[in-house]
Length: 193
Image (cartoon, rainbow, N blue to C red; front, side, top):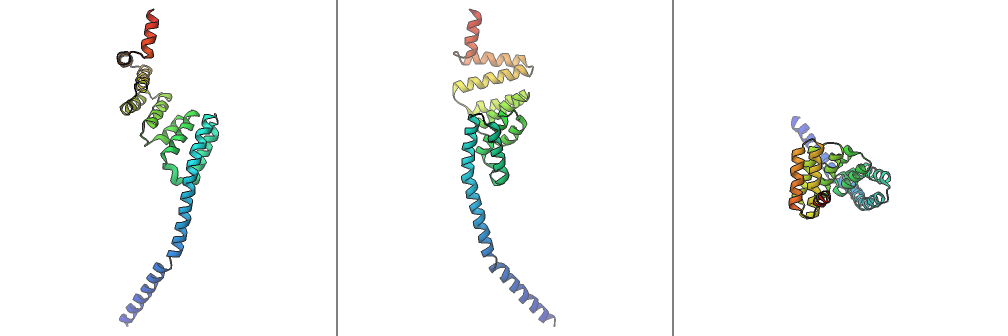
């Protein structure tokens, strides 16, 4: 009797297993196809949203660009990790003077433009020493002298605003030595004449 029950349970289990394995793929593949279409639609739309938001920001339509990006992130959460879209959203937030929100979008991004925007946000919030750290990180990535000079100048200003006049003076002195054609040297020459 126990053997018959076990046999019946085994047969029932095999039937259940058979039905669950072989009857599901049609539904799964249909869902998979729908999700694939949604992802493709989201990808195509992400390119469009990115370009449109940058154009809107150039035309001064910052709030419209911000709304478009935020709505896109809500509709397609899978794209909330897209670095280009995150940077565009951070740029919109920065232009609206929402520095903390901009920093949230910049978290984890690490190319020179993104770290530079984070440094500007920190500087705007009055977090000068954190801004110095970010500017120094960009300085390590950047090779062009005119950009390096601007970064070092911003570092000096942040030191000055944080109350560290000695570090600021040292930074400005280094700029005048490293970049003879710098605006600091021009200003110094003007003041001496």
